Image 1 (cartoon, rainbow, N blue to C red):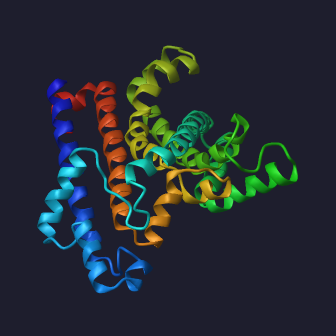
Image 2: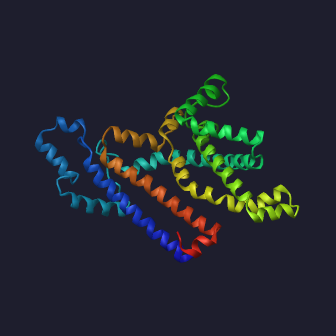
Image 3: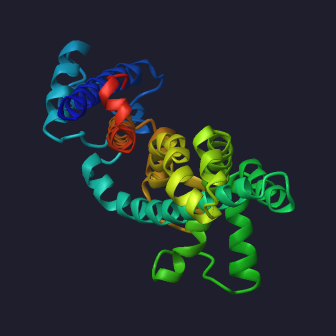
Length: 309
């Protein structure tokens, strides 16, 4: 198991290095000026000093080596548009809100999605199955920029059941978490249903049924362990997508998260902020995928024994 973990860890480091390298050089290809409108108002000599201050007068390979060194030390640079703000400071200020919202949404989505998928599989080709899949179909079809305003208007502004916005007490977390989890519930429900139906046709399940075991015993002791493996596989990217939050949900409910900062940096061509936040998002994804691989190895020992992953 130790060799399996070390191998996945090395892959994680290599992947992160590739992403950092690709992001750095792709930023150089973007049109426009990293200093925005300020550059147009500065005399050439002042602009030259500004470029020297940020190291932009050096060859790209020197800039790259310097940047890699700073990233290795946890320094993601300073914003071009707001020189008093570093990328790390922005992450520290904005990410906790996105993380809290994402965790709450993910927990809700996993519980509801798995239960809905199991229920649909047990009621296969019956009214319960059709109802559950209809809910899942709506969840996949309706995007968050429709769900979020709808929940805010109906449950917040019209019926006054929950707060329509702001980020204050626990009651303010419910609507944004629900809006963010809506699509994830649908994905997990459909995945769990398909996996349960596949497992239910295997011989050992038929043997368990022939022994007269109850449905609850068959599901919890025989079906669930194998049926949940594909769900664990997709939980990594789903968790990252949910935890990092979305601009629409954060904007609708006035959540001071990181998604808004990321989009703002793109519109202002803040290269350092774009690169730093991209690396941060990528690091979260890679770490979560690493933990998912480890969890997968624990759930199914054949993975680590065969060395396929």
